[in-house]
Image (cartoon, rainbow, N blue to C red):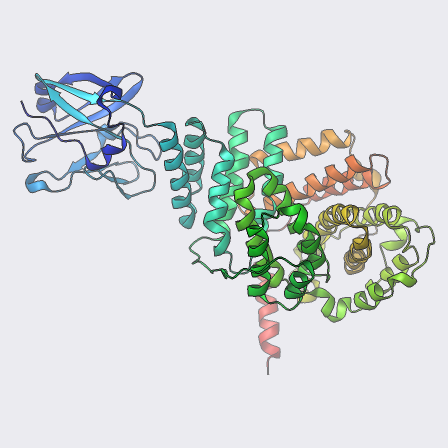
Length: 555
């Protein structure tokens, strides 16, 4: 009786015969008579197919998981094609038309790989080797499949592969590292919230998930966002040039928008095994050299350090290179007329006063220029002034004119929404972290908070009352409830979901840092009102009106 040949890729299973686990599953005659059969062995449900005319006396026998790796449809109900003259043996899952080549093991239409099993025939019996691959092989396969799923943003497949990674004994954070290594040079203009929100998502899963599904959700949101932001993007290579790290030279290269030189310094730092603590000050100096990227630059530095700490040293290179590219391409708002008062204010900071900070309400209704002047009156009282300015930003968040988010007849300069106000909070959180490490950065941090305050002053609703939106729960209970709810959010866009997570996390950190500060009840009230009036996620008519107006004015 001849033996059915195993498929080529099944050499990935252990080759040491003593380690194989051959199990008798059926009689050959019974299988030939039926053509296909489902058998069970050690908890596995296996589909057997007899393929006639494959060049052997008994034909060929193929064995695979009966459950389609996509959504579990029984493959024994699938369509089998091929056979004569060595033609490929293809199995189609009729549920979603996924197609598997049972000879090569490839998934021809679909994504997830189908597990197949070696088969042999002995004394009229069909035996299947059910030996599981080694854990390290399963982990590598899952990681490779995560990267393979990213270019097409196969969200559900990413979730399955992370689950397979964990089942094999791997750490889901290995999947995030793999995703970062796959995507870091596909961000054409550098860092995005796909990286910046990752540490907050992971922290939410660590601290608030109550089951494995919620923990998995926090990881999949991170990888899915990286996938979305780089979907179908080509690689944008970084220079391989290296030079010894010099902080001043690095900061100047960022100022000059000279990516190759800045990256060369980072390459040199990595070659010297310098970590984030050694690079932090230079990165923050560059991030705060301008009121830029609408405050994202220092947030990105802050979150890079947090994520690198989670993912380990192998994450440092992809995260840093992507971050530096983001700083190179950062828009510099202090160079536009609206914020022209920033540069002279910071240049004359040393002439500022030592007056006690005014009440927070005094900083909420002024122009950018007047807000910066008022801040300079208390220039020598950095941390104390910070708490007042954060309270002012919280008051503005609470009082945002929600009708601005819905307007369709406004000018481009009035395209204001909740994020203009939430960014003041998340920037302040990152700014405090930066200035506590390097007090010389307080002037930039405080004045840039002032830029937010001055910008947002014209879009406040006088009718909003703190008591109407005050949260009755303690801040920690309220914020943890919001964050836990984000593990099953319903926002189609990653960018919206991650802003809620980043905002609530920043609020929690600031309240933990100063639990008795005046901003505490205002922060949670502002978030409460935001949740009651969600961000409008698309502006169809506004875009049409503004486009018609813009084109009509073109020369």
